[in-house]
Amino acid sequence: MKNSILFLFYSLALISCQTSDKIEEVVVIGGGLMGSSTAWELSKYGQNVLLIEQQDSIYTFGSSFGEARISRSLGPNEDIFSYLQQTSVKETKDLIKYLNEGESKKLHSMEDIYKTSPVTYIYSQSQSNEVEELLDGQTDKYEYATNSGEALEKFGMKVSDTTMVIREYKQYSGTLNPKILIKKLHQGIKKSGNRVQYRQKVTDLKKENGIYKITISDTKTGLSKTVLSKKVVAAAGPYNGTLVKDIAPYIRRLINPERLFLSFLKIDPIKYDELTPQDKNKLTASYPVAYLNSEIFYSMIEKFDEEDRPLLKIGGHFLRTDITDLNAVWEMELTEQEILWSKENTADYMVKLNLPLTASDLEFVKGYSCVYSLTESEVPYVSHVIKTDEEIDTSFVLVGGMSGIGAKGSLAYGLIAADLLLGKSNESFMYQKTKSSLGTDRLRLDLQNIDE
Image (cartoon, rainbow, N blue to C red; front, side):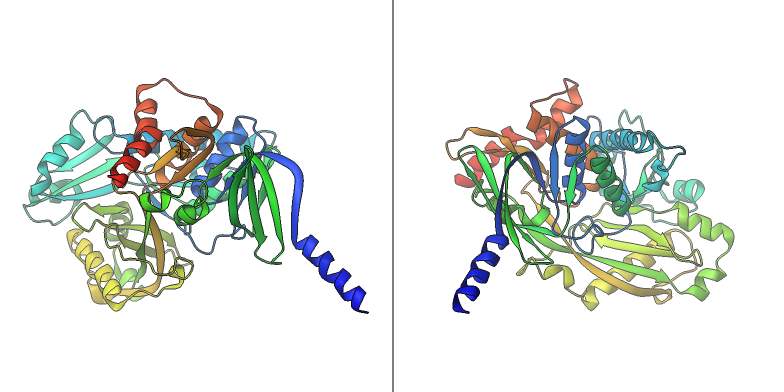
């Protein structure tokens, strides 16, 4: 009996910690927008890829959670974030085309992901230099109101004379649905013959004799295994610092996760139904919006309910708080102050839109705590990591520090990450500028700064 128990114990131990003899070509860690985009771009290049995600196929938390992110193109001359958005749109078109290949009818469209609508920007007169730089040589279609009279005439908005309003009009500017985009990226990865493994949490990552050893725990069964790979992409959002602690321990000093809140409000159904069709159209056409002030209030329509009433999503880009427990932060409830801030800023926008709605007409539906991964400059990294001897590790790419600006350019980040890993390049000026802004030279400079 004793021998039988011992045999069972050792058998379970062996099962729970398996190491495959197979060496993967590329493992991408993190199945959110950044990891999925990178895995898709690698798949498009014909690479053998394994994408690992700790959640199920349907996201329940994380920075890629939800149904709407602002997608905007408007930026100053040679702006890398405009380039990232426009490149991501182009890459998404390629994804949609690939998914429809071989199908008897068109099953996928850009409109599944993007909702094109005007994007409204609100500035104060003190930001006139910034606005002038933004609009100088601007090729995207826009309208600009420099004062209250022009805002009323062009947009039907009531603003003060110290307020400037810009509205951007461009196809696929408006919002994008990260939930749908991730789903389609995974479909593309699988259609190419590659794999996506869900409920797999990476618990250890090391490099030995030129091969990466990735220890993974199945979040459902608790069983562990070790995957070997020649190349790795780390795209685990705020978990990147912990993930790469043995590969690039300095990343934890360069990327700082902080909590942001998202508030979801609806308009009192009776008050909403009393709005005229013109007022409802104005409201819909006036989202998404961003107040480009010190807090950066932004809001968009997350979705419409079965009665065609909008659910408004609100956040403050710079309203950040420290995190004590990264695994628990997603469950944090919003404070009364955060809910009030959301209602007051939304009500202020309703006044600017000249709609008969006040803060008392706004109902709090739910809140969500999310995480920004922040670099000091708030510009993300898409970079090889630097080894302790200051040499570049060309077999490892980090995608992180997105600071809430990743969604609109997600496939472009993935394209650059895939190019880095495979040694490919694009000689266009904006590609090179963007790659330099995100990449290894900047990482090396940031490392020097923190060591001083």
